[in-house]
Amino acid sequence: QEAELALPWIENELPPGVGEDRIYTGTVALINGSTTPEEFSQGVQDALVAATS
Image (cartoon, rainbow, N blue to C red; front, top):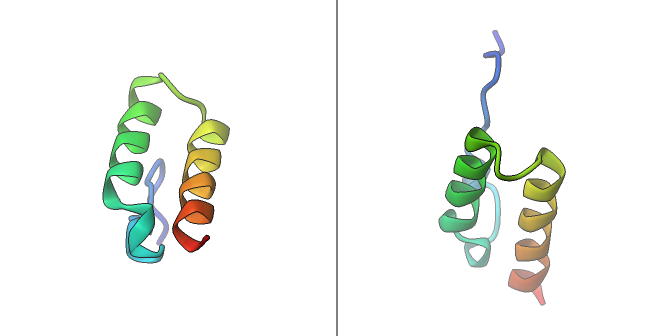
């Protein structure tokens, strides 16, 4: 059964260069409303690109 309003811990699926910090601070920003889901996703994508470049 899928949990409502849950975020998966995707840092376990991303390259180490993305970093747990990007996920943690982004999640906190989502919770407190200082970022949008789109901004969070873009930040993770940017970190992923930087980690694999």
